[in-house]
Length: 295
Image 1 (cartoon, helix red, strand yellow):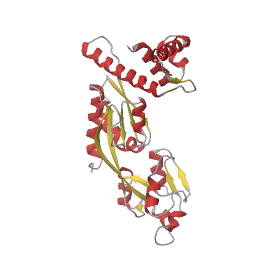
Image 2 (cartoon, helix red, strand yellow):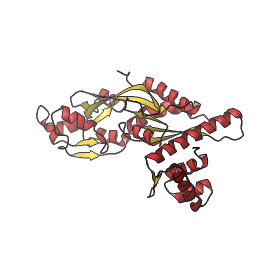
Image 3 (tube, rainbow, N blue to C red):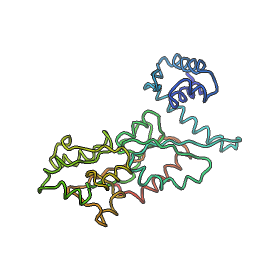
């Protein structure tokens, strides 16, 4: 059975844009034609590919088609460029990354690529424990992830680790730390990134404190999360890049306890792609400079 490239690209357009109407505008066809193409591929495969809600999302079978279409688009671009086949546009490489990497070391790592006219990088931000899911779904071609086990169809390499330490302002500590030990952590407000962020919870459990007990500010942005800690909103687990200078000059202090090391890995499609490899090489070079050596 031969998969129709046109039909697969239509499914990809619907998933990327979220609606049949938006896909029709990109493909310069009618919404009816888009719907007919999707139904034709579903009939050919004998499987439903899309969940028809807003936004449209792929089924497990649809994710396979999305991944196939993305790989095909990348390889086609590179083949046309190698053959000198006119205006080939730019290659699009999609990468999932955790917020703290994005805020601290990833942009400097990618900066050597920014002067290239034939490549753009589109970043999807998510928790380091969830970025591998975007690889599995076909949403991205590569990911910075905490998952050491290779996603099916991918290769994995260790990047290094980010060290997180529990820090707060001296004023915050003097205001809340009324006694020795860790009892004060039950009442003192903390700063949490979002509901997927478990670093503060891991720290509290290690201190013998119920992680659901303390009050918390929720600040779902890496830079603003660090700013909230620096402004005395609460204590938080900060990576070295966001607290080293402030710890050195006394603007922040450590509140005790062991650091938490988060090991990071680079996973990418197992695909012979020069564009994807260029991004991988840049990320790995940047990680060697910015991250602690892998264990």
